[in-house]
Image (cartoon, rainbow, N blue to C red; front, top):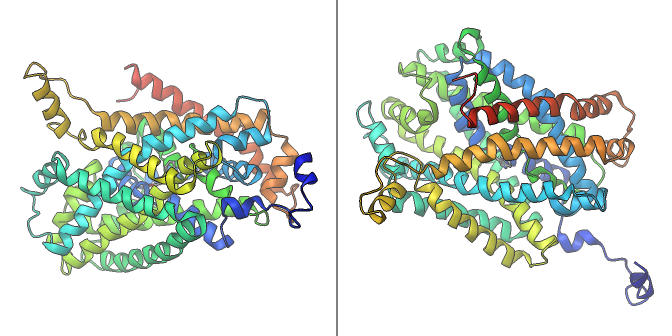
Length: 484
Ligand code: TRP
């Protein structure tokens, strides 16, 4: 500090940290980037299928409660810590509470980014492949007999899943390479309006299908008999994943934001848009599934096995199907960039490697970890075959579900634990007044009721809810889960 003052006559203007790190040029740019992070495979792939498995509307009600009471308060807390610290998710904790070990939570987040992106990019790759199939071949080959086999054939293959995963990582790296304003913000400003437009068109198509209303009814008429304790836990876990909280991704984005906006408003807007898009995705998928008499409870295969059969039969199915997969691809890409950015920001701010080199190193390493994940998604996957050959046939029944391990480790443990520790940090180490002022923004009133409700949720209801997920996750892991 003293050193800087001493040299101040050489530098007539104070060094503006943000001009070195980069920043969002506008509040709307930041909002679109945060919404882009939140809206992803979680909304269009996962939400509809877990809702399908858990009785439709009944699940949705529980999910909404989780978003409001747990997810959004944690999201706002992440924004606040990020904008206060204005540095990597690791160093933000050091800025607010110097000399404490909370920064380890930031490191856990960087690690979680690694883990999540390595399998997320694999699924995003399948989506891109299904888009290509629509463009070049159409979905005519997909019917009740063939659709499952075609999908399993793709994901247990070797070159195709890897090539597409590589393309996803390369596109993600390319955007991150250009930095916050020219990369992340610009991508969000182009891709998010595109996403909304495609979704609106698909919605019209789906809702005008004959027999489609049964799908709407499925979504909005609660059947609580189909909702289990496991469904409730799934709703809570998914609230985390879909809002991109628990690893410092939203914290990292907010570290590039200046101080004017009210973060409670931004957080509520992100959560609302995320939920609206998830419901719209359901309204595209279920009417189509019901109109063609298919099963809404197919699980993860819903969009890859069930829907292509719908597209094969539907008028304009090829166009609708390719648009649908393009939509998911766009949604996934604005999410993958938000998972890579925290890793890159950490390398830039803390390890002091420049952005271009950081981007190359991080994305390459994540791609490497992604290889075994990508090749181990299903029985008879390429990794199983390789290990079988290496063990000269002695390795028989055992299968390595590396993909599932990474998926479970991150969504059942790393994200909830990261969110839980963040709540404790707020409770223990960050002065309440200072946190409230940061959320209120430069001109906001930190004593407003809404902000105080946020604080209360973030330090009580949210951590208790999260703790429940973690405990049941552990019980499940050791085979003592009360649910099956
Ligand atoms: N929210 C995204 C989705 O719903 C996924 C995602 C993006 C994410 N960034 C994240 C999940 C950070 C956890 C943490 O698909």
